[in-house]
Amino acid sequence: MDCIFCAIRDGEIPSPKLVENEFCYVIRDINPQAAVHLLVIAKPHVANIAEAVDECPELVSGMLKTAVECARQEGLEEGGYRLVTNLGENGCQSVKHLHIHVLGGEKLTENIGK
Ligand code: DGP
Image (tube, rainbow, N blue to C red; front, side):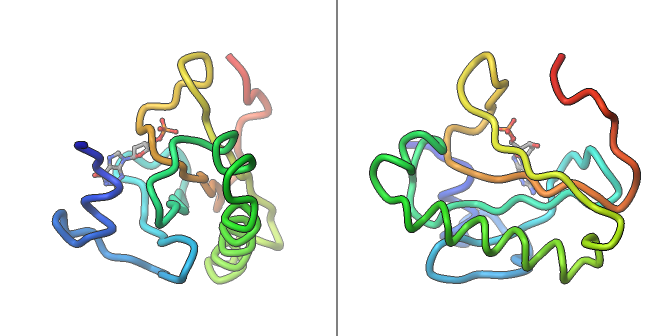
């Protein structure tokens, strides 16, 4: 199976990891949509948040905790930030390996839909 986030996890594709723990690792998005744009990426290959909630809910809470801690570390808490996870075609999920976007560092658009 070809999965870019598995390859980064395994060091086959170099990408600096800001944080790594038993649940996930964190990198900066290659195509940032905000001044700060992090990706909190599941360690195991799980397709999306729905699969994770069903099969390994502790992974979801571990990733959310990591996302909040990273946002804090990046100084985003005072100004606020956004957590996003896309699912499937309508959600415009391009990488089919669970990840949470952490967006902040500037005022984001009010419109988070289309
Ligand atoms: P999504 O559309 O929710 O599946 O988001 C996938 C994100 O992953 C997208 O914002 C771009 C990012 N991305 C894809 N490939 C790479 C990569 O090789 N390195 C990094 N740092 N980010 C990547």
